[in-house]
Image (tube, rainbow, N blue to C red; front, side, top):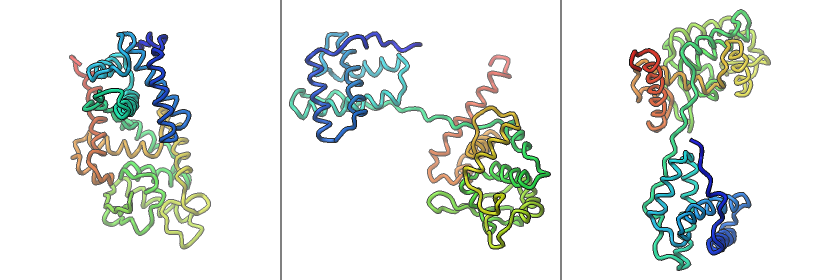
Length: 309
């Protein structure tokens, strides 16, 4: 449905214009609003005033029911929730100003809840996409073997890219198959490493790292061609190159593999709190976004393969 903006051709009444302009002028004096913010306030208030004008209502006569109907109308016209939340915030400030100035007796925005914008689903990869990406580096080459190992570890453990490129030798126990990861806020967590990733790590340590380790005291696991710690930007660039080789056209970054790690675990029945612990999230609500991704994929599978989907 296209957004109906017929009332945009209307202008607020002269009275409403004066009220709005006085509010913006005072808000600028009190808060030092930027020009862009002033224009945003003006646009949002004119929008509301024009909508009221269609119904013969002045902006200083608006009641709670009028405001609620306006917000409901925005929903029917497919305005985004984040846009409507911004408008409501502007209207709250405006009507508090009118109440303070004695121009209205009641604030119509009281007890009106802001619409909750849906959290965007994290971009992720299918399991076949991941397999293609992991197979893309040429492992007969030193840098290709390093990249394959980094990709395997990133996907196997759900690491953040910073956790990967700063990983030190002391943080890995090949014998126990675990890594001690220092995450955000210097919080430590133990992360298991699967057999596949462990095999690639052993091969990297045996064949590739000795050729890259120019400096004997270098403790970082994954080294650049110059024998120094890789940067996030370099690894991001390498992932993009391998994604092109794999024929993956989706936007991709190191974080996408972290998303894939979490999503695929949940798709295969992992407990949400286990995934939270593995990712190093301090709040379960941060991890819950992945349940929506998993549910979304299950719905698509059902629609595609079920005879009554």
